[in-house]
Image (cartoon, rainbow, N blue to C red; front, side, top):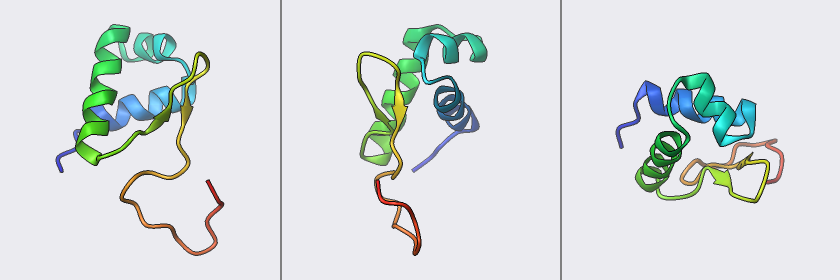
Length: 75
């Protein structure tokens, strides 16, 4: 699985902004381009990174394929 720095920057921007439009502005890309990048990353890792609701976006607490560590909070 190849993850690019831009993919991680997109996830971080979205996690901080909790809004696709604001995160896209911060990254100087269009909202559809950001959404597409996130969707492709989710396809590569095999599961969703976000809980998609009307608003705001929410980052999942536990990433697919990442083992739970001792003492971790429950999702």
